[in-house]
Length: 210
Length: 210
DNA sequence: CTCCCGTACGTACGCTGTACGTCTCGACAG
DNA sequence: CTGTCGAGACGTACAGCGTACGTACGGGAG
Image 1 (tube, rainbow over the protein chains, first blue to last red):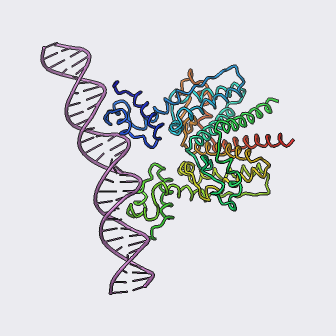
Image 2: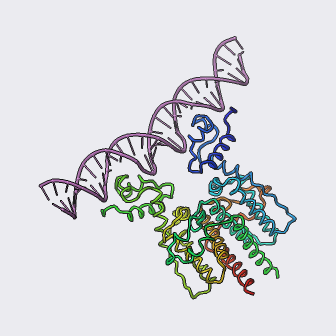
Image 3: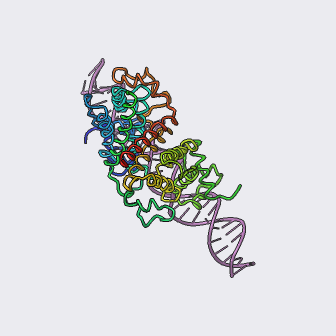
């Protein structure tokens, strides 16, 4: 058994989250998985919150942000958004952890820097770039949370909604659209909204330069 | 002191969340606020999870969805989205609770029904209406979470980012745009993205009917 | 009056994060 | 070789959590 260290602890935490969900994470549980005393963890991690920060940072730094500065800005932002969505695939149950922690570290700020720089190079003004950036962030995070089921409200998937279950009098639309509501191709849905946003932004840019 | 009942318990829970945040919520704490034994709560609420569902439902049912079926669909969806955002104003610290619980009840499904019906009446197809609905939900929820600070990652507000704090070599854009990043008129930002989305959707509709 | 049931409540169990003290072991100074 | 020291592993302990269970009381039904 290799010596205990921060990296092994973080890896065990991620593994535990993916196996049993974020609620299952406890210092005792992680220690047990590592076959180690609980308090030994505290020699390498100051507290649970810092451990979750490290989890977030690790996952974030695994995302492959391949950016081609020569490509059109529309393709670049699309690629960046898609890269971010990869988190939901590579670490689905950790997504909420990643998204809900502010990281002041390089791993957390690099995606921001890239996005802003892309928008600036596309020709948007300072204030404009930040606004557009925020719109994309909101959409991407909202989409991720729906995909991993953290915000099931108003996004029922899983056949949780059956046409028979809903009162056709009160909710005729939900009843009628139940087949479409209960199935969701996350990638297609994500791209649909993403293209919509990019198209709208491109429209603004074109209209302003004329 | 009036007799204990479900309504009073839910009200106490909401009050506690708004005063001290969702993490401060515990059955013992709520019971103490009501000057009542902990286990007395369980005569009116089956468990903590159900209590939080009730909290979500209560807040949701307070949202005023004034919908004018005669108005253009663009105005209607804008109004619905803004109404939803009111949650962040009326119960900021409860927002995450509301958004993260799936409600099968009428209070949870009514907004969905309204949105879908608006989109259908605007002329969108079944599948299309659901897709567009999902895009709006993602954007609205993402925006709410940023506004209430649940997803501070990539959305640093509060002057948390100062131009001096960031390495100008590694993050030139973040440094240059720090003034804009550190201040955020949530309502204006929300409307900016909302109008962008509505405009894009309207474009799709116009293009298809021609 | 008696019975009964809903409500309030105390106790208890297993879980949580983590502060603190102890013990062991490898490295290095003399 | 021996004495010392620091770092890491670990046990114990405490306050707090959700809630299962048993008990006591008070008012309406028969």
